[in-house]
Image 1 (cartoon, rainbow, N blue to C red):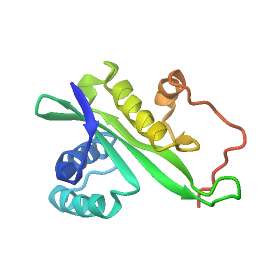
Image 2: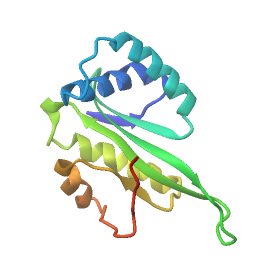
Image 3: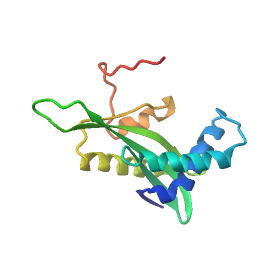
Length: 149
């Protein structure tokens, strides 16, 4: 198994994993998979500067993905270039879960965050995955709030 930074050329594999995740969870039962794959490729091309995908492969097969969304922050007099990150859409195929694939994906994402010198990285997690993120250093912060319309 190897993890690498994905590119626009990997759009079909990434879209396939995204489709699988959403349909597997029962959130969506649509029949427009081909349309989604095409629109996903367009979206990826448009967002490649802000959404950095990582792909886990087992031979020729895509088995997991994780994304680092990078956002520019308002500069301060002390720090004129500020950026933060958000881990998004971490997914490993069910048959390989709890085998370390997610940990390798997350390690690649956090290594990229260090390389980019991000101020902080957040994640919005499922209850099941909270311990996973805590094991690598994510912590609850009472000052981090969110608003949901």
